[in-house]
Length: 225
Image (cartoon, rainbow, N blue to C red; front, side, top):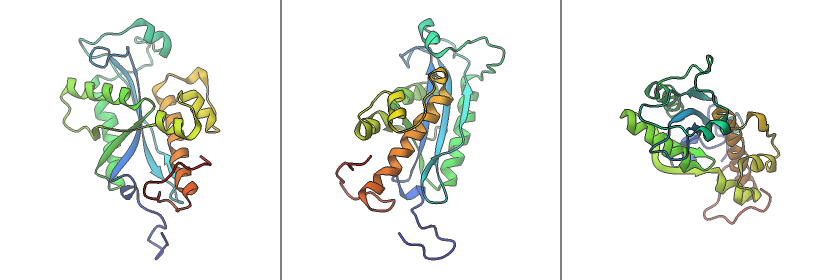
């Protein structure tokens, strides 16, 4: 795509790249693996933005610690993995509805800014995050969920194709990025690393295809990802 005047970017807008959806990386930390039963404890969302050259880059994170919803359970083993201390004085957790309002407002603003139709969740094992998100939305009867209800971009699949790795820590390292084990299992940290992996793969694909920022129709997997 060529630049036509000083006000026209030489690359496609975000609204033209993913069928009108804005990729938003989401990571949740929870009280277990059953989204119908276990509590949502942390949520982080990072809209994917465009830099001056049209490259995909992670945007600003919106995050919240969440007060366990009434009636939800917490498996102590999950807290051992995440290191979450529910009664920590600096946790400053929000009730579930308030936490969703905070994150969704940032996502809707990004969707509007990029003139997209709605957000599509990007995650590592993305349906895990989406199912917990949808369960929380249902509990509070939230009417302004900006995310597609079932479609996702999963970096497990992308990293498996690009790097032969499906574990987030290994995918991050295979992408040439740093991984800090001490900071892992925080919603913000995991979302930031997932966003970096997504952007690195998504930016490399069209370059490998030799087609600017637009992948060819039905492309073969690029060899140099």
